[in-house]
Image (cartoon, rainbow, N blue to C red; front, top):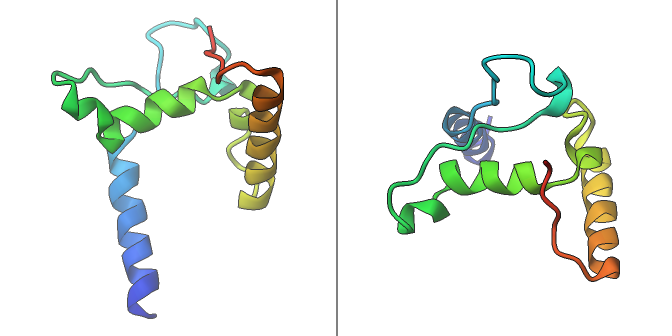
Length: 98
């Protein structure tokens, strides 16, 4: 095992500890919505931190991108590129899920 792969594994584990899946107290949405929990930021500067910014960005993505998180990286990238292309070609910004 080389140092680079060890660092990636440690970094992945560290980042995974910073984000959590949202669990609704009651059934509000389908269980497979794959929404991340957004923790409140007390300072404007802290909103740019990974633990606050990543759930906000992930939750803004369309459901076609985030619906199945067990797909390969290549499939995820393809879906993400397609969704961003559609948004870009329509002239809109990334839409919020409601």
